[in-house]
Length: 230
Image 1 (cartoon, helix red, strand yellow):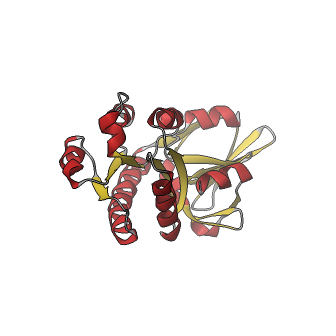
Image 2 (tube, one colour):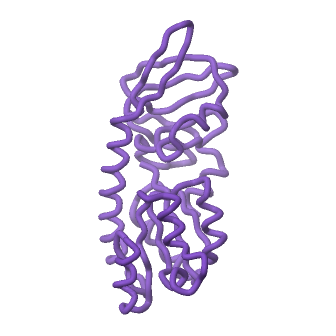
Image 3 (tube, one colour):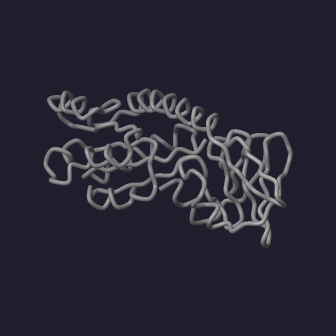
């Protein structure tokens, strides 16, 4: 599974620590980061993170109130506040935080809380996959395919192929860019000019390739590869 993770902290060192700990967690992730809350809010406008590590002091001292803005934009995104002062812990929960971390961030504490967040995210995405369908019309026939059955979409010339986890392929005419706009961005990632993958089916990232369920290997473009690891 691909995790979209945001980090907004006034201290660049704390962002580096979060990135370091995430790399040690043996996951595939896309890191959205900034030391400026206004810039961070702009970054996530079109790309909803699953979980955000947010410096609570930015919430307290800046008029933008990034935590409140994030909750308005994405009510289901997990916010984990990071603070150097335990006095602000109550404030974190008043802001409906999922959890909190005390600076300096310790690896063991970080991984424990992130594990809780991962469990929540997986459960949420499983519910989404189980209840949503992709519908395609071809030669007068309408086919509805559960998202949970789709491994990836592949573009070849003016045709699009849906690779299902049971091995079946479904072919139809369509525009890949329009397809990307139609499907759920939280659940699918365009990892290459010719591929859109189901993020819930990603098992590993190795040698510039994504490894999906059934050991399906999909090429990863350089731009996305850089984004995944900050």
